[in-house]
Length: 66
Image (cartoon, rainbow, N blue to C red; front, side, top):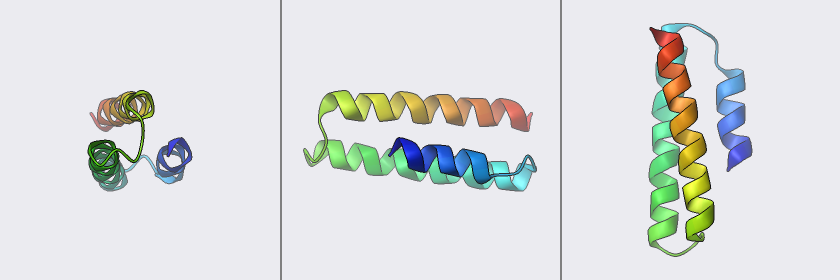
């Protein structure tokens, strides 16, 4: 999961369109993590770690976009 988030961030350019697309992809990934946790496919500790990473990356991308 962490590798996917890093790949999305590292492969995106600094254009607003690409940043917006990356943010949307990361938000989709957040939903998948939420689903996996609710379906008990991943433990709480892992889900929490993934959410923290995803929220941080989304926040950083939004700051770059400004």
